[in-house]
Amino acid sequence: MYVRVKHESASTQKLLDVLTDESLAQEVTPQDRTLGRIAWHITTSLHEMMSRTGLDFEAPHHDTSLPSSAQVIADSYRNASEALLEAIHKQWTDESLLEVREMYGEQWPVGLTLSILISHQTHHRGQMTVLMRQAGLPVTGVYGPSRDEWTQMNIEPPAV
Ligand code: NI
Figure 1 (cartoon, rainbow, N blue to C red):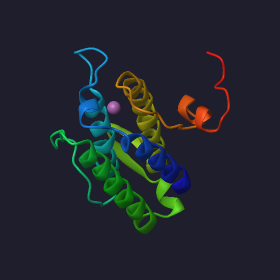
Figure 2 (cartoon, helix red, strand yellow):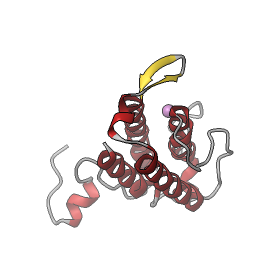
Figure 3 (cartoon, helix red, strand yellow):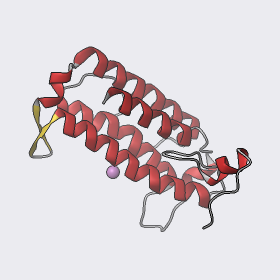
Figure 4 (cartoon, rainbow, N blue to C red):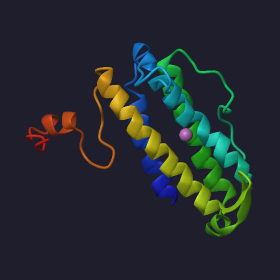
């Protein structure tokens, strides 16, 4: 599970590292979250969800206002996920994953919360990659190569 969280953090970081300040305003409709808002939501979700399990680590809280700098968002995510991984390593054992905590009015084992954190991040990362395409940014692969990466490998991307 620890390795999985680490891999997911690295995939998210690769996307956050290519955001530009201008791209943060990219939106799909005016009613929906901008690219910057989604990136910040992913970042603050680490502490918002995991602190409910009792895990103690330093990271931006969910009510922290949206930074206007893409670099600040990327660095905040890097620091938050490093702090999260260190806290898991130091504060939990395999048995901790089976302990049940009150989460959003329900009873969830800690391992389930961790799994939902990952799914939640994957969901929003998918939204980010579409907005990143619309903003003209390069997209990195997550579970396989992106179109850009096929091209870098001198392989014809799969037919659309
Ligand atoms: Ni969400």
